[in-house]
Length: 214
Image 1: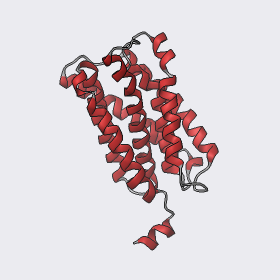
Image 2: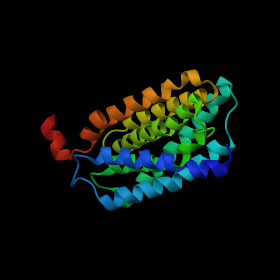
Image 3: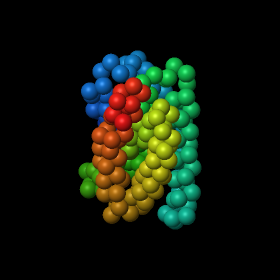
């Protein structure tokens, strides 16, 4: 797919990214700063340019060892970008996991359309048009986990890394064999649900609130 076509398809990443953020922040009024959510989203879009370049111009061939290698490179790059951005001192408040999710959504909004091969109305094209939605919700989820890892427990760093790695592997494989298309979709639903229901509620608690629960 040409870079020009990819640019035209970027809104297919931005729209689900906005939806994912809207769902994520629901119920947490007063626990985050709206300006930082917007800044995180815009910053994530800027960071997503690097992943856009990596995925658009250095895509692996359909061999499992190469797919795993490239997936590790993509995952490591994505993880470091999120971690470094969230380490900026003005993110040091209770909304850190939400800011992480916003960064993840912004990053995915830019690089997700790379996975759309063509524009037509075939079944394959329609399936690939849905892929950016899966990427956005997975990236939002892993961003929440990176934020939770900084604020709460480092185990979330490992969860974020492993989920991203598996997601990249599944996404790349599905690009070469449409029969595996369902894998990233299932993963997106599961990780986003668990992030919202398990990771985010605990990581958004203040220390005093957390102590009362224990």
